[in-house]
Image 1 (cartoon, rainbow, N blue to C red):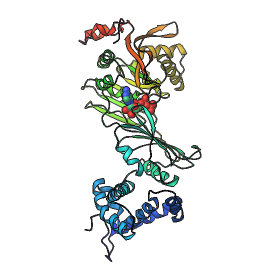
Image 2 (cartoon, rainbow, N blue to C red):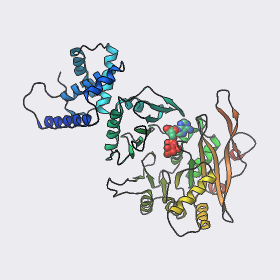
Image 3 (cartoon, helix red, strand yellow):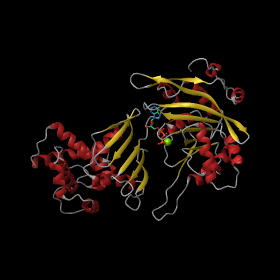
Image 4 (spheres, rainbow, N blue to C red):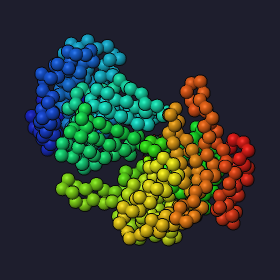
Length: 471
Ligand SMILES: Nc1ncnc2c1ncn2[C@@H]1O[C@H](COP(=O)(O)OP(=O)(O)OP(=O)(O)O)[C@@H](O)[C@H]1O
Ligand SMILES: [Mg+2]
């Protein structure tokens, strides 16, 4: 059977799409040659391992000569594999390759991935238990599962192979990566966030870090069931979000900030207009009325950059009820505080900081970056009137991610922002298996906005503020 994406064998006339496909093949060949994929090199790799790498590369070529590439993009992966099957079988037969049925299936599946998607990364992308994929050069790929990093057997044929995949990723978002632009952020089609660093910045070859987009984002309830926070904490936070208490989620890299922000957002009433601002859209708000804005990096010649700050300013002209900034990292902190202080209570963001006190210091420093003529005391009083709650997250040594503190900003004393811890995670010791033992506790202090909650008809169980036992 001649599949619908194959060139008809032996036909003399060539249609426009055939010509286009030929051109694409030529370009691909040129590209491979440029990346050092000469056949001599292929042979060397094949000799060094039993995994038919050389055959695979040759097979790849064989298929490219027979496939109308221009139609590949329009087909589903399974369809492509089915269309590839007879061709691969032919090739295996013609070349007397000693493959059994299972090996043939694996080869077809691999070659399908290779031609369509992101090659060796495909199985990792398809595995929902993996949260991060970390490529440390062509020969080493780690993943993170359940908070722990593990080494995989996945590898790339060589650096050129990895670079081809990397280029595919960044080209899809209109960027390029090479010596002159060695650091690039990109996004996969499914929303996964990608950071790429290549030589000369990355000394040992291409480094790729992928934070996978979670298809089923964790709800606050799920986070409670994982032990990331106590039920009483979740109740307090849910009530605070509904009542438009402005919240900053603080934590280190990969501590779960975006996850918690996303989970909290589900308690925003559905009749509000929300504007989200992110560097790479990760948030998955469930409300019907959401305007999503994303920053834009500068073009190759350094033009047309759109910063978070531009977007926060713009958001204020869009009549939002709340503004949600994925992560404040710079001078947009100033505009965000303005927004929170001028009728956009309930706005939320995350910040990279290791404690609530540190979060305040970071905001202060970032507001300073906006270059406004403000005294330190003025900045601090802006912070204390704009931000109400700081939710501190941490990734603990045993790999678990937890809410380690919920603190309230209660005002200023002199020129110091006053913080009160309402709830916390208290470490008690270590389990035998190295897991950290601990419990969530209330401090005994009640939030100052509790009366506001009551007047809004939101009643919290007083027991959640009882410090005499675990929450
Ligand atoms: N409590 C949790 N239990 C298990 N996995 C979690 C938990 N919280 C978050 N994760 C997972 O950890 C990974 C990192 O989470 P997330 O992206 O929210 O972190 P982050 O602090 O925003 O990271 P970054 O600093 O890179 O922006 C995600 O894959 C997420 O699904
Ligand atoms: Mg994040």
